[in-house]
Image (cartoon, rainbow, N blue to C red; front, side, top):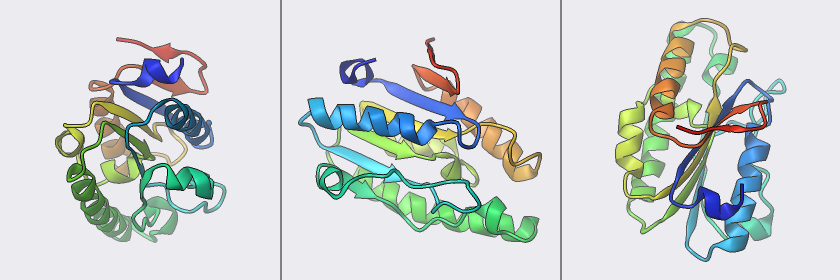
Length: 184
């Protein structure tokens, strides 16, 4: 797909840990930067890489100058929490910081938003609220975890459920490591 095929669409890239979601998102973002003059915002929700999981979009300094960049502090709940209570507290804290960034994004006249690792929002936030925040943005490119790496927990079930709701808003959807999109 070329950048024209992503414009005015809600693209979702999902898959297991380390399946290439961030790399695919970065490729699309670079294509959009190359062929669009409209302002592009990037909301990077990925935590710093920990135990081989996570990682921010590796944007160059030049690329960061070409986008409106938001990256709130994120604590990876399942990798940092010692018990379910602490995991949920980290998820709620992340959600509050992410919503501050979403409010700032909503206040800008944007046509394009790229979100790296929306899963961190969906741990405690909702797809419905996310869509309210980004409702005026015509082009969305979003990636997120949708797999079994983290096992079964209340947080994992919630994340999975919210990701499935997000799928209903998006077209195309890329399930990685598959190479082709699923169109609705």
